[in-house]
Image (cartoon, rainbow, N blue to C red; front, side):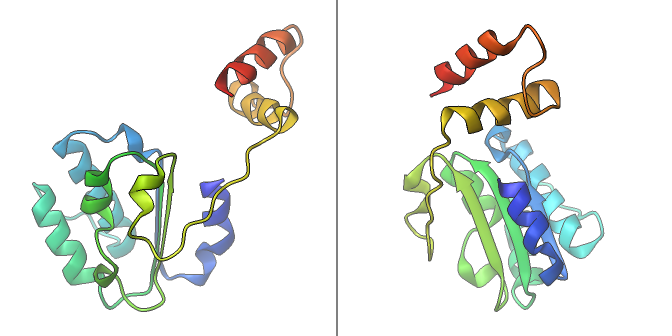
Length: 154
């Protein structure tokens, strides 16, 4: 869903970045790598940063006058947010920062939060099938197993 939103609105922004599945970034090294991706997406050159604080400083300094779109997908820790999109004043007027998370507590300081509706069983099976089989429905012989997987996921 986050990538679909990005694909729909990114043409309205000269400067944009999509950071996928941020939840896997847990170490300081991983956070610096995420900052490097964000900065290189926006500035179109690889930054020379070696720690999170350097990345924060560069983001604040170089992005605060630019209208930027940043989508941060599947965040699960506050330090990830702090390292990547920190505060409103890091970005210029008209910027949009979109965060997806399963943890509502991470959205306490955002301007607007929107909940996603829960998928029904059929929608969940289709989504699973696209990821597992690159098709809208399970491969022959895998329907029952796929239904069990989807049911287990809730």
